[in-house]
Length: 160
Image (cartoon, rainbow, N blue to C red; front, side, top):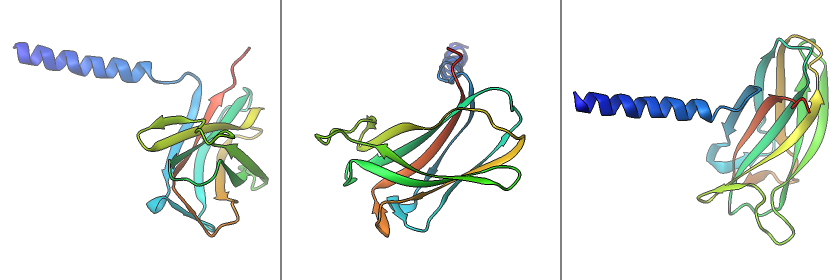
């Protein structure tokens, strides 16, 4: 009886902590691992998501998870945002990963660093339907070593 009660308390604590960690206003979040932590020049990381809300403003964040052996202080990415009507928006973005002294700017966990940067700020999605965001690295190397994953998060803009 006491064992069952303890198990129930542990389970309830886990559920409460998971719910407490959920971020308000997040429409979509996903991270995709880079095989063997080597991002090849022509390997595209693709995210697909559906949009129903064309009224509210959203921010889109890109996250880069690299290990501490990554040789550069930044990463350049080519991005394509494809709309449900087939049109696309193409950008080149830079994400700063380390400061001028070589200190990582992102959150570290063991030998990995996760850096998050705003990709699109305070924008409405003009159409309902399926959107796609694609990323390729733009670092002038065939193989970009020590990149573990790329992620995106779409969050409703704070109404401040």
